[in-house]
Amino acid sequence: MDIVDIIKSVEGTETGALVALVLALLSAMAHALFGAVLKSGDPILNRGAINVCYGLAAAPLALFVAPWPSDALWPILFLVYVVHFAYEWFQVKSFEHGAFVLVYPIGRGSGPLLIALAAIFVFNEKLYWNQWFGILMISSGILGLAQVNLKSALLKGENMRGLHLALGFALGTGFLIAVYTTIDAYGIRLADNPFTFLAWFFFMGLFSSPIIAILKYRRLEVPVDKVALFARGLLGAIIAVISFGSVMLATRLGQVATVAALRETSIIFATALGVFVFKEQVTASRLLLIGLIAAGAVMVEI
Image (cartoon, rainbow, N blue to C red):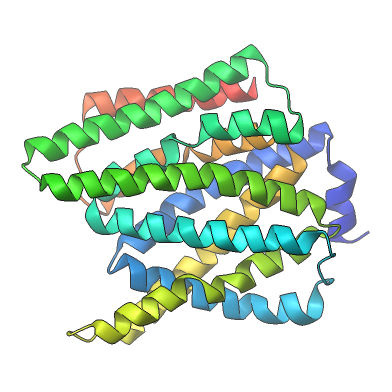
């Protein structure tokens, strides 16, 4: 029995739900690291380098190893490409204009409730009252954390126009997270072999953000450290494969709404990175809100 048969055998079972839980939490931790790598240096150039690294690695798998996509899967892959291209652009623009601890919570916090609603209509999922309550706790905690960080930025006298742009791009990122999570879950369930979907997902990344990165690179007046850029790209690519690969497999094995909510606990790891990497301060109110997010994650899984 190969890995594909194993995945199919646990779909819709308690074992599959447990594996989905582990994968969602692994994705949450990895995505926080991914955001930190993206924020270090120029976000647009970093995103382009990351996509080039995982796109080139996925190319032989997509073209020669994994089974070819079915006729029904091609239009879904096209939608995945378009939505992720838009998401990547909104994400890097939010990082360009705002602090990591401000835009990351807004981008992540505005998604879980939208995804839960989409899961009801698209996948006919049923959530119990405690799961709805847990999703609301997670969203409220993350958005509350964003509000605290915004207040801190205002007190520091940061540029208002820059903050408005950062907030706008972060909210757009959150909306696109909800859209791509729903489409990705549909696509990986539609694919007979989940690795066909994953291979093409990463391969298509070659033709999105790298285009924007090349255009920006040509306009640079000060040359960048190519070795450092490649290192960030390679590291980010490894983390991206873990983060996106884990959450996509989790949505095939478990409930989309539950997986999406648990993945947003990435804000807990992101806050730790904000403190230790970006030297941000953690106040009592921030710790309280992080506790609310963690409690919400427990409620989702009860």
